[in-house]
Length: 517
Image (tube, rainbow, N blue to C red; front, side):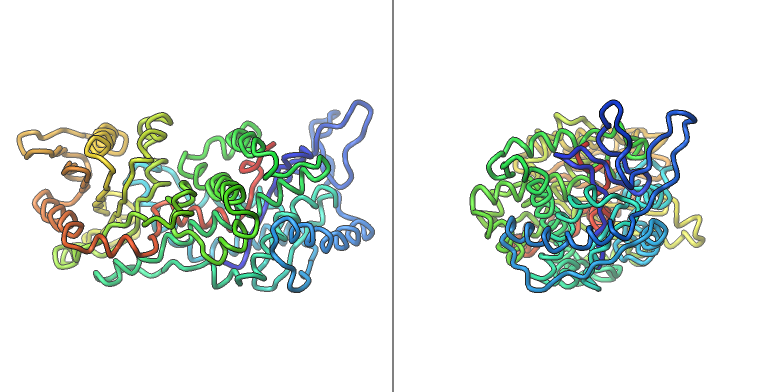
């Protein structure tokens, strides 16, 4: 991904920077607004006209780039190999860049394609319109960006230099990462094509989730430098003051000053925060355990491959095997009636979001550590011909196999999943007369739902005809017991269901709702 965009609210200096508004810490009585920052006019309720940097301010800001670059280098131990180009951008040019990149970005396109699957899982409501919401959110929040294609840090002509300098600490960390590994080639490992056969299926499962984990590394490292830059006047650092990260995480969940994000689904809120919040926690553990060089250059040289490792940094340190299930060949059963639509991992992050959405935060905290792997496969009925028909969730059938560390955890997840069918479908009616041992079968407005509990595994099928669903269950569970599982576990992870959204958010900015206020 070429661009890294940021909209920051500062931890130490109390400044909020965003594309829609820039608000400094409230001035003391008698003081006027900060230079270069639009303020609400108390006399008429209107905002004063937006101001722009003077030539002298722009020169000061450009001159500060080198000093902040060397601060970021000293803080991260990532060497400066060459200077970073700098360019001043207008608000209009930034907003156009955001929209153009959103429309052209491969992950944005995959995210839009996955919208039906997200709704099928219940992670988005059926009537939620994903693209318009995200375009609106991103265009009003962007504050600056580093372009890894042109090796340029882009500064903003409507924000005062002192307000932009903490942004630069974050952005220039990405420039140092780029000089160390070449972000364009390092960052994008997932496949954008539609899987057509079993070889493609498992190729996707082998590489796709890497991007999610790498985003967390990049943003976690940049957040660590950002925090240290914000604290530099106090003599403290993230490493010497570990409680700072805890306070930061609490503040990240406060959406009181962001009405758009406050009404966003849990999936979007968690996907936005994941690279920054969990990435920072991951980096903080490595900094304490392994030192700065290993936490920065070392992780870039040997990056984690799944959100499981980001959520469990000790697992990354031990180089533990990452749970990954194997996909059997289902195309012979499906391809006459269905076209392949989407395949991926329901990873630790997805399970945490889904469980919290369905059963609450306490259930998510308790159940997520019990996750031991999961894959899903979606196919679209060939009976859906028109764009309108293809946009309906009823046109897509879904199967999902999850593995758990114990039968009790699997049983709990199956119960949570079944309890929430009414959230996704209408006319839900259980058909116990059709059930065998360990099964739950329901009829819905979009066809049958099968939930099958088998030891520490849960298989679900939604909208596939019941006889076909049982055949798919046999294939999916059989693939994990034929010797392929051990091989699959040594393979780098696959794209999580939320992975495309995480990637789009991480590449479209650290927005003010994603930072402490």
